[in-house]
Every structure is written in structure tokens, then in C-alpha cells.
Length: 152
Image (cartoon, rainbow, N blue to C red; front, side, top):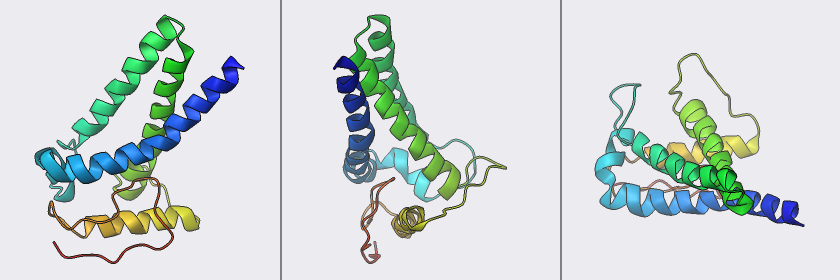
């Protein structure tokens, strides 16, 4: 029974992180921490961006769950951290590798309707380079009917 609970926690966190990411992207990154996210919408180079601090933050939160969870055998805590990590891996593979091609020499193609849809949604999001007027704030989910691009 404990294993099932931990698997459910792991899966619940992996899935629910998309909602956390959407909220953070819309209200924090395009809100009061735009100063950190702006360089992502106006990239000048392929190296590190201030925007990468968001990934560092979520990595540290994940680590803060995994480490004591494993150290003190609090498996639900570790499961939650590993669920966050799974979402983070998906984010990096889609957003940084597939879409923005931030790792030289590594190319992933969007094969299949689902991946093509999230690429299209993220492309719509990047049509706006300003803080306001953005659409499609999710990373690993996009509705079948995508909204029309708005002017900022």
C-alpha cells in the first residue's frame, strides 16, 4: 500500500507541476519578476540567461524534498521531489532542447500531433516579446484549440 501511495504522489506532482509552471509563468515571470524573465523573450546569446534562475529555484525545491526524504526515509517527501524532477526533465527536453535549441548539437524534433501542438503554443507565446499580452503560458500542455495571438 505504501508503494502505491508513493507512486501516486510521484505522478500527482509530475502532473500538477504543469499548473504550478503555468501560474508561475503567467503571474510571476510575466508579473513582478519580469526583470528575470525578460531576457528569455529577447535572447541575445545562447548562454545562460537570468530566466534560468527559475529552473535553479525549482531544482532546489525538488532537492529540498528529495534529500531529507531519502535521508530520513520519508518516502512521500522523496516521491514528491522526484515527481517535480520528472516534470523538470520534461521541461528541459521540450523547452530548452527541442524548442529553443539551447544545447549545441542536440536536436529533438516535434514528432506527433501532441508535441507539434505544444511547439505551436510556445511559438505563439514568443510572438509577444513584452511583459503584457502573452498567451499560452503552459510548457508541457496546450489545448487542442489554441488562442489567437494578441498584440502587446
